[in-house]
Length: 98
Image 1 (cartoon, rainbow, N blue to C red):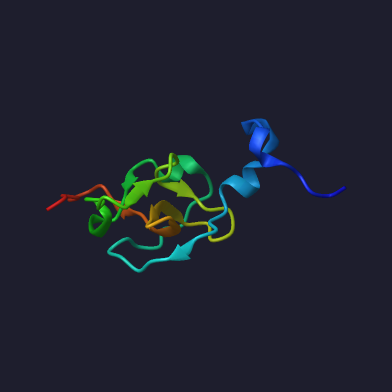
Image 2: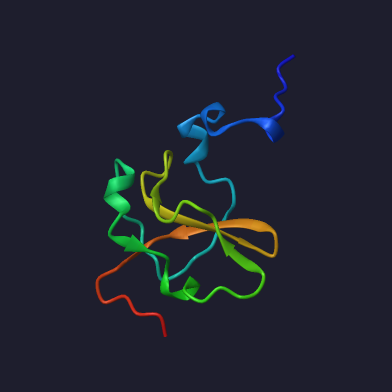
């Protein structure tokens, strides 16, 4: 049986490759594509300014900005009305949420 029940699995059951591969829809924002080779490369980045004030139906995932395994760019994810979305992160330099 090749199916797997993820409902009772632990973090160790997920491969890091799968966990850091975006699965949602890309949303164009003020964030920019930035090359990365590890999550540490993304620590000085934040959500795009366009996403800094989530609405009642928008929620961050628990990852923050991370280095995406296929794009090799710093991205961030959120859910928007139950749908997963992602965008490029923005530099924290001169970053202000209006």
